[in-house]
Every structure is written in C-alpha cells, then in structure tokens.
Length: 267
Image (cartoon, rainbow, N blue to C red; front, side, top):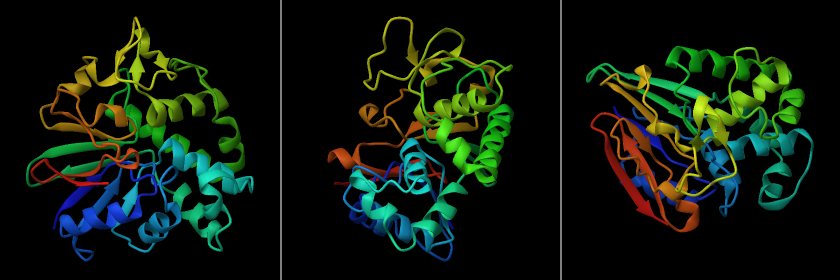
C-alpha cells in the first residue's frame, strides 16, 4: 500500500489517468491526495471531478480554483471554462463533495516516522502546524455551516497580513489567502498576492525560504501545488512543490511519500 500526493490537475483528465497508470495505482490499497485546483483552465474538469468523487481512496485539499467553482455553483453562474460543471446534472453532488475537502491534510508515515503537511499554497512561517490545522478546521466548519456567506466574502487581498485579532470575514479571507493563494511573503508574513512569477519584489521572498522553528523538524515535509512557474523547485528537500505546469503543457507530477520519489507524465 502506498500514498501518493499529486499536483494541480486543472481539468487535465487524460494526464491524470496516465499518471495513475504509471504509478500502478491500486484502487483497493493505495491512497491519493491531490494538492487542489482539480478544475479550470484544462479541457475536462467535469471528468476529473466525477472520477475523484467515485473513488473513496482519492481526496484533495481545496485550491483557489476549487473555491471559485464552489462560488459559481452556489450563485448559479454558468460561465467560462467551468460552465459545463455548473450546468452538470450532478452539480449539487459536486458541490457537496468539493466543499467537504479540507484546506490542510496531515499524513503520518509510521514506517519512516515522516510527517507530511499538504496544502494548496503552503503555510506561513508565523503559524505552527497546530495553529495551521486549527485555522484550516475553523474555515472548513464555516464553509460547511454557511457556504453562501463564506464564498461571498472570501474575495480580495485584504487583510494582507495575519493578526490574531482578526475576526469573522477578514479572518476567513486571510486564512484562505494564505493557504490557497500565497507565494511571496514580506516582513511579519505580509502577502504579495499580485506577483505570480518566481522573482520576488523588493522586501519579499518565497514563503518557504523563511526560517522558523516549525520548519526545522527533520521528519516534517511541506507539500504544495499552486506555483507552476517554480516547476517544483524549492532548493529545500523539506518543501516539495508539485505543480509542474501540466495545464501549461508541462507535466503532472506525483510524490510517493514512502520514499519521496517523484513520478511525472508529460502533457
């Protein structure tokens, strides 16, 4: 039995099937965790969702594009590349399945004593793992209790830094932005959400380059997607990027957590 984490699929259904075949995915024994952004931009988001929903051994964390799809279904806005999903006969089932996906998944590999923390974009260095887990659960509870409210207020770049005093809408928006949109951080973990390149603006650097006590555990690994232009390169073995730009005609990549091997298929 193996557990694999797979990077951003973005509707690239044929590549997902090819990758699952390449890793010899056993539907009875293996586990698959996706880094979010199952949908949008690619050719067949609906097929990706239906396939994942039909297999109880496949799950995902929420990405920013998944949250956008939830918003479109909730407001009945059938437009763009997600029009087919919003208009699907099972759109309500898709909504119920997708909104139950967490923002963060922890995996403990008992055989190697390694711990993996999977999010779509990452975790800011000012949060311990315990803090991040708590905040992720807080947002998930709010999403499932009052989805219309959270999906409406999650938009925007403010507040652009964390404050324990944040409440209600600002608090939810900040947590969602850190976990699904973050790339570069500045002092006090301030967010630069406009820069999508690999070159930081003055005063900022990639979130995973900050030193923190929570990042120094030898057996902890942070696995994320979201940042295709990195092509998976972080220059730190404890930070593993898996978005290798499949939807941009790059590759779709899986990480086998047993031995940290990466397996990819080309677009």
